[in-house]
Image (cartoon, rainbow, N blue to C red; front, side, top):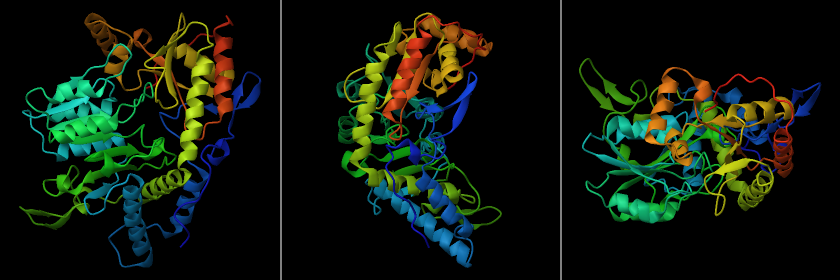
Length: 440
């Protein structure tokens, strides 16, 4: 068998499949400038190579004695080991599962913890909807609010942890998908651990950019998506303390999750098989493991490059007339920035960047409506109007911002291109008619 992964420098655009795609701009074609990494990323050449090398051996796992099934099963279990190593987890105490993305993983763990309406889950105002709505479905939710800069500190979390009743779970994002802000995860997790509160981390934005050591941090559950870390083949990662999933009924039920079934009884399989019903997405899992191995190999190179991207974004956006940043613009951050431009609707800015400059960004509220409402300083009445407009499909009235986001494969030159484009947009060029809408 060939190796699981290839190697490569992820700070180079050419490492990405499709990094040289051209798009029509005016009467010519230009290289597409992808500044939407917080939404999703293209695959690296190494990830695609790992998938291509595996495909001839593809079969179903744990189902057959044939050579292909044996190879596939071995590769699947090898991927579990890769994920545990990737996030610093001990295989004797933690296990790895493969939900299709962060959203599914958080829904799975919210269900599997057996929460009741008497339980409290502590979360924060910066969260993506994926780390708010599953908890609301099963328990009471307590929110740590943000200050005027759009951030919170460990003391705010401690105060919320010490309110009664004591939360059963602390569910936090490792990094904001809106502003790129990084909370003090070590301090937050330590405070929760000292109070016997389970720590669940939405790592969708954090894991692709920074090393995470769940054992050192005391994280009980970490969930993330492959499609945000160069493995867009439909698999994500969930690493959890084995004890949390040892008992109880699984989130999805069906073949593979059982030892025995009769007309009136089910004997559930042991973990992790219990939470692995159905034929899994082995191709996606191979891609996810390959991306994890590549990121591990890249080490500090990616961090150095991304710090340069943060500085470049700050420099370029700071030169655009009428541009107002949302959230913190100092301290440790990912290369992500959200902003509005005076007199220009967010959808129009995104549309013109795409049509006139071949630049892909995102506009809207980024599946973080409570956070954007705070960043905009909306009153309760304005939030209600937001909801009323949404119900009536009056999308042109909905608030929103523009978000640019980079990965470790984003060239610094692309940020300079963005700055030039934004300055051109604000210089008074004729504006096209834009159909209103929001990307999320």
